[in-house]
Image (tube, rainbow, N blue to C red; front, side, top):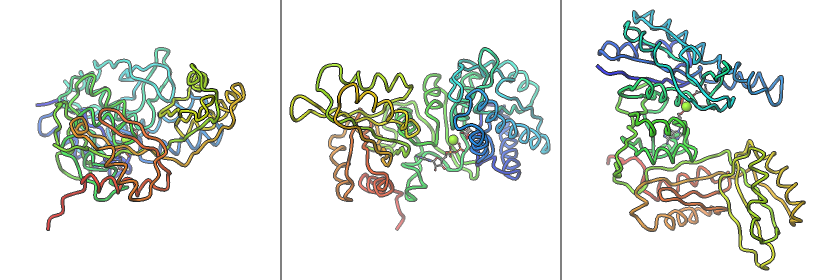
Amino acid sequence: MALIVQKYGGTSVGSVERIQAVAQRVKRSRDQGHEVVVVVSAMSGETDRLIGLAHAIQPRPVPRELDVLIATGEQVTIALLAMALEAVGCPARSYTGSQVQIRTDSAHNKARIRDIDGARVGSDLEAGRVVVVAGFQGIDRAGNITTLGRGGSDTSAVAMAAALKADECQIYTDVDGVYTTDPRIEPRARKLDRITFEEMLEMASLGSKVLQIRAVEFAGKYRVPLRVLSSFSEGEGTLISFEEENVEDAKIAGIAFAKDEAKLTVLGVPDQPGIAHKILGPISEANVEVDMIVQNVGSDNATTDFTFTVHRNDYDTALRVLHETAEHLSAREVSGDQTIVKLSLVGVGMRSHAGIASQMFEALAREGINIRMISTSEIKISVVIDEKYLELGVRALHEAFGLAKKTIL
Ligand code: ADP
Ligand code: ASP
Ligand code: MG
């Protein structure tokens, strides 16, 4: 007998029929003798709908009230799933984040989990019940409802599994595992049986939304065995492996991309010590996170150009702040571009294989795709390219690194 935490995403609980199908799947695990804690998302589209309502009233909704509003989506699904479980003879109880005491900090809309009080869940499990917990939400010290950022139910599930010392955390979604890239962009993408924790962390942080990055971080910190599976079909899914060796014996695990990037450039700033700080200091004070940075060597030895990327949501703020800074520094010009994307190759195999970067650049060049920025780390290479080349770029790299499904002749 094992203790399993199962998380079902929005599509998996998107209708009454699907909630009933989830109940059947949970019941099956319980019939096999396992103790099951279920974490659910809101029905698909519901969180977007609620955010839309808020924006119809306030262009920038009060963060505290937005959390009160968007946490309701998950409250609907926990109750419906608990009813569906009872209806098939499986005793169940639903709890909101505050009832379970998923305690977070007070950063509304992007709160971090501090700790979870597993006591209540434990006594329900002992009494033979399935426990259904609302994902995405928690409560701060002062008793305010908080939410964990988009896709946050993944993190609720992993945190729940860590708190309960569960044997496995299973993330059920609308694909049957982690693929070499998003199968919606490259239909020939291949499911991975295993991916290393480090690779999954990079994939998530570079834009693969199959798992929220904080969920992967949490799994690493508490060594939670984590698996991604389909809620619509049977199969082993993808195991996130903590073994260091290159589990798939490939150079590249996958390709990630982030569509919501924007680029800002300031031209002709004085080439002096401290210039990066003068430009980026005010950006960080405005709470804007900077991703990639390139500072050129000025051709005249007196001035230089400086380019960086931010999340597209922060573009307007960053541009305004940069204009102010540019005026102080007597810079020549400020420009910006919101039609860029970041494309990344990820793989622990890069450590032991040379020439991956040039192979990547060659594959993009063959398609006539211009690279605007580059950044590398030990196990990833990222490039910024024009948005219109995203699909072409993903497919070209997928082909160049032989990631596609093996076809049977
Ligand atoms: P859920 O609502 O279950 O949390 P998400 O939409 O958040 O589901 O995540 C699943 C989606 O992630 C898939 O439908 C797929 O389009 C996307 N995705 C992006 N990159 C990958 C990848 N490398 N492997 C699998 N799915 C991916
Ligand atoms: N319902 C939330 C969202 O849409 C959380 C989640 O689905 O994980 O972002
Ligand atoms: Mg998700």
